[in-house]
View 1 (cartoon, rainbow, N blue to C red):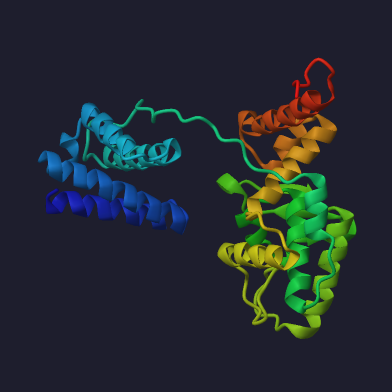
View 2 (spheres, rainbow, N blue to C red):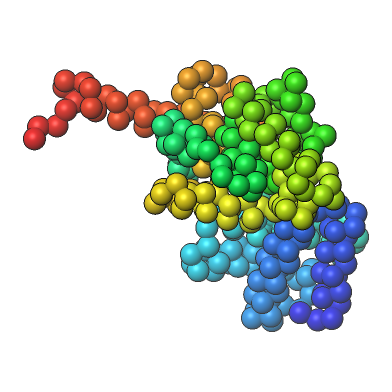
Length: 301
């Protein structure tokens, strides 16, 4: 690509950061995606963004697909290209959006892994032996109690909690949407225990609910590591990711209530089709019970 093309790309990312206020994660992902498109253009001798055609974008995505990229990654690459060309159109640097109406290859949807109720109880019902473990148990109880995303758990502030009302507010949910969630009694007790200890032993540097010993907000990576360490201490061989607690929350709630709309609201899903994946999990559970219990379903030894 020529220098003008590079300048347009740089201006797009500046606009994405300053005006749109996209997250750092989104900006970095889009930068990686557009770098791949730039490499394609260089390979094909395309020097100006306005020269990229619909067939070029389709060929680029097909080539990325052959490199075993997931459907989700390809969808994000297309989203980056569409956003860039919408910027070019708005500023008069292109006449069409060559990524419009191109779809990424569909991929079989994987069912999320969940823990059963006994596994969750075994994970959470244990006496913490240190200040950090008191904090960690409060984190994990809240994660499972309210079905939070990992980013939402990390982003919670003290003012987001209303313990007398057994509720919290997620102010920065996915898509910038907020929602109010209930907090279970065990999570309330664990958080109250953590806050008592925190007030006495940790400096009040940040408004975050969950902080390090230095008073700094815990990031998502640190929460993952703490859960892994907790599982090692508990002798749990299976690798448990924080989102398994969110998935377990959804699966257990749906299994008990059969109220898909309520679970959708609690999870903060825009589209109910996203929530419906947990109905498949519920069916798997019922199918297993059927296979074990129904006299005409049992396999002969």
